[in-house]
Length: 390
Image (cartoon, rainbow, N blue to C red):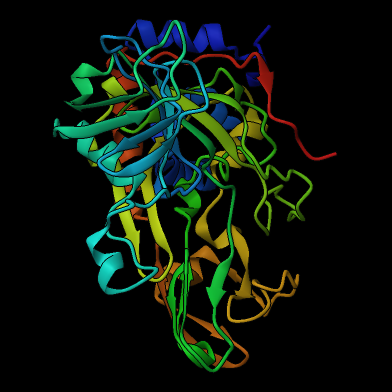
């Protein structure tokens, strides 16, 4: 008796990957395949669909362990290139947040509130092999007598460096406009008054969680492309909101799921972790993230066949409503419309611009496709799936 595609397993797919027989396509390619062949046939023929996104992800950072000094130190205050890190951990551990600005930022001296350099830039510089100034202060104890330390370090000098991002890969996000009469500077970029531009931040049909909208394959332990290396989903991210309104295809129409991800910084590349300075907002980190979706059944295949025409988001006013926590929208637009370069808001045509890079997202999906095709990257079945819609 012929088995149904719904019985395909991770073990079967990994066996095909090891044998060099796995059929792997990107999420963009899967749109056409599902449209032409149908979900059932696609699930039978395709083994893995790769996704990708490259965008600012402010809730990011790294746990950095630096070698002990002589005499030893229990660092309570830590700086990397004058960027403060959190030192309330064990003796020589610190957490460096991507959005933390440099205390001695030259741009801030000229334009108060503006920052050229922050935690995200330190992470990028470490990956570039640059020398970083490490400074630490301590209160001194019998077992950790030193009260201060200063040395230059590179990534190679840090025995443990763990990229640990509490909220990445947002599943859909707002389209931002500004309906006020003045320019506003936000994490969504500069927004002109009277709704003269609109910004958005998603790779649309390439985006990981939009290809697994009901979290049937992504969960704790999922192996992923992270920052140019291999990482893992380690929990659902902060602000994970699976109860957000969804369309008939299960895709959320507002910000919904998020991911907590981790990986060894020593494996990563500066091309996929880029420090950012956002005008009027501060510092951040652009993160390259890609997730493989196993074709376990036709339902999952159908989900990965989602196109930009099928994904909608809300137009939100950042000039007044967002800062005052007013849950109001000014229309709903598809990612096909957003990527076209213009949308219509309140009867007026408004130009659009992405904060995420579709070119980079496409490259990530292709790299992941290549890794799997070469047998270098196996899928990892989650120990627990993400919390889903009730």
